[in-house]
Image 1 (cartoon, each protein chain N blue to C red):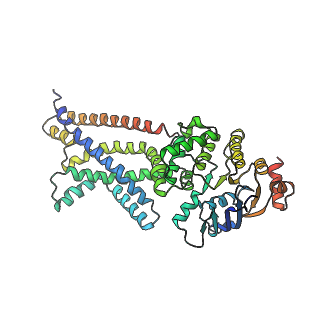
Image 2 (tube, helix red, strand yellow):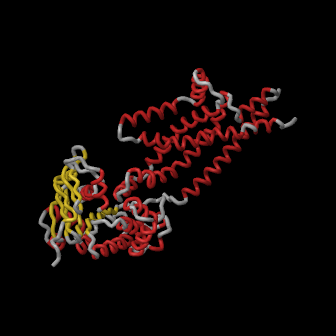
Image 3 (cartoon, rainbow over the protein chains, first blue to last red):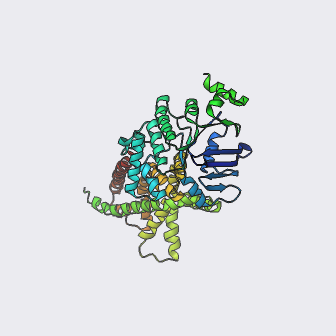
Length: 253
Length: 214
């Protein structure tokens, strides 16, 4: 018997607004251990903002966020220690890769391990090389990021996040800045990660990936989750009119 | 016709270089805290830093030097004016460098801060290890241009009695009927020094920037 599934990510009544514009309105989200949650929806729906609230890159205006037992409640003042502990459990991959251009590929992956987890240089390098090998880029270790293609840079960014042993990985449109072929190498790495049981929240426009790889699909529009459930079910028979409209636009082209 | 005055003028070169490099060096270091304060989240700190920068940059160097040497000189006994002049040039340079750093900071992609924060790096680590080195590299050309300007501006120190190139030039020129020779020689000397400094800065910048193809 597998143990009771527990939510690694638990977002409660999340609210975010910029001035008068409400970007997220009372969003609830639960992601179980080992689950891959895909978030789709039209641009401006608040997908990225929700993702960025999970590791508090954006400060929510209301609500609570729990990641692997660490809770940050926006109602109370956030302690720096809790913030650091929560971020340590969350890995994030950005649309624009955001590798550090002044550091070699290897150093991009070892520096955070040494500074955040206090690993020794030797430990950090061993872990970095293991991950680079896993994403197929061991030979790039001594290069600078500018010498790598977009797809390679994104795989390096994934390795950099994984090196900190996160409980959950957030992907913010990881293939949107890549041409289709390079995007595929990144999706392959993500698929392997999902197969190995990593808990993932993926904001994406890759419908194929959302349908085939995710266990749970969330459709967002106008600052809220309008529909969620098993991807097969939603793709086959969307319940919400807005979902139907969106899927028609992205699938029938 | 002899060029013996050239050796007299050359005596001033070490002092000119000292004023330039000490002033620039102090500015490179002093500009960092000033730039950090300029970006402070606390608005009175931010405003104060901005006022200091505007004050230092708004008043011409010659006026600053007269204030420090002749103005404050009435209250403070200077054994040697070199030190207060160097400190004054360093302070003014700090303000210019702080603004150069600020321009460099503006050129850094927001994603660099986000990635560093998301990885759990502290604000200090983010500044010192991720963003700072990138700002430094971006700032090299502007800092070098400023340094070459300072090399020439250091001639103003002659007016308060510092024995740099212009001091010795004037010294020989006064004893001659044809003053044109020494002054033209001084001009050529500044050109040579500027070119050498520009060349040095370019090769330094090239070494550092080769790593950061932006």
